[in-house]
Length: 155
Ligand code: FES
Image (cartoon, rainbow, N blue to C red; front, side, top):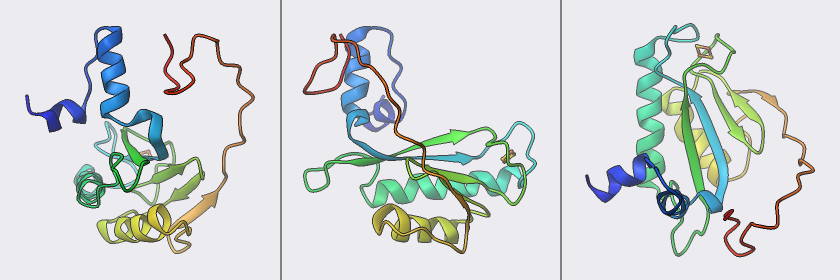
């Protein structure tokens, strides 16, 4: 298995493997997390083929632009997750960007390119495709003292 394949999906079966996943995937440096409805079991918002074309475009462009993992010049990354269905089920493919809480409709490759350039890089919502902006409130969460202060990783 190539290192790229290992980074694509971490199959962790013990604590050291989990720690390696955290490091290799840059989980502690995620700036934004993008979810997209794609490869649906029941394709309602768009065809499965349309969703997969958009998903593959997103993956390819994040990688080409080196946004998918931290680099020396950009110590944060954009994490992506393919969701089976985001429960909107119309005007797809549907995408949501967190923590901004911006929901996008009809995310064709052309729309995704604009979202990457204008939102993920330029920090401006692409109003032409956005149908809701609802940033999640900051949670009041209590961390156990077993968390490493430097890495944020639990023992
Ligand atoms: S099928 Fe795409 S949001 Fe439900």
